[in-house]
Image (cartoon, rainbow, N blue to C red; front, side, top):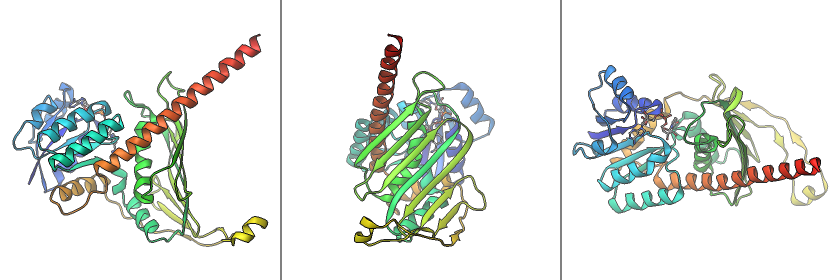
Length: 345
Ligand SMILES: NC(=O)c1ccc[n+]([C@@H]2O[C@H](COP(=O)([O-])OP(=O)(O)OC[C@H]3O[C@@H](n4cnc5c(N)ncnc54)[C@H](O)[C@@H]3O)[C@@H](O)[C@H]2O)c1
């Protein structure tokens, strides 16, 4: 059995703990949280694991082979670094770190210490994403042309990260997994409507070498919850509605008819109509899949689909998008100040 320590027993940490306890490959040795309230809550559930105050105390235990880190983003790097230096395998929550320099250092450290470093991009283990990956990989949609994703809801607002760093890792990790390409260009804009400095809406456009364009709409201020992810292809278009229980995945065969290059220059495209297919999507808690995958990767039975390198790619995209978002916000402020001055004069 793999002796595991959980660091951070908040909202997501409690889901991780339940899944670690339910997995026979792991024995949960200890849980760390500096909050007395959270440690009291842990003891209330009569969990056999030791309840400790600090990450350091858990990492120092010799019975611990691996740690799972579910703390605020700013703390991920230091805790993961310490764990890897002490020779522990690491599963860290998304986003992997607060900067790509930190992420790169962790990747190098894991390689040097020959330890597993994984990032919990939970959505990769939803049955729908596994199915989308297979469908795209088999070429069933034809040549992929676009991804259009909407992940909006009313909150929950985060204290430490904006909407880009909170929700962005979900769709970016799915896109990274199913396209297997890195973007050439990243555009982003965002707005801070609910408070003065934390973007609560973000729009991202990513351009890929194979001419795929990806658009993400991320938001915390919509009273309507939407979890929609569409993948357009030259042959078919797939739409995943994560909130639907019966019709999670739909594949549309209707679309523009393919044209020769000469026709494209002179004729408008024709459209074909067609069937809508409803593939059956099984349900299993994605986090159970993540925990099982962590155990198998540690045992050398699987290659990770969410390793440190993929976590680092997501952080690099987030950083580039953050720069573009900051520029866009500054530009809008500059232009509106100039316009108000012009009106006033
Ligand atoms: N994969 C997913 O779908 C998913 C969903 C939600 C949150 N998350 C991620 O999980 C992480 C935690 O988010 P959350 O919503 O559970 O936050 P949370 O605030 O509910 O929980 C964080 C916990 O960490 C504890 N903590 C803070 N510093 C610590 C330290 N140095 N050592 C040990 N414990 C410490 C806090 O006391 C708190 O109990 C974030 O990285 C977030 O992005 C992932």
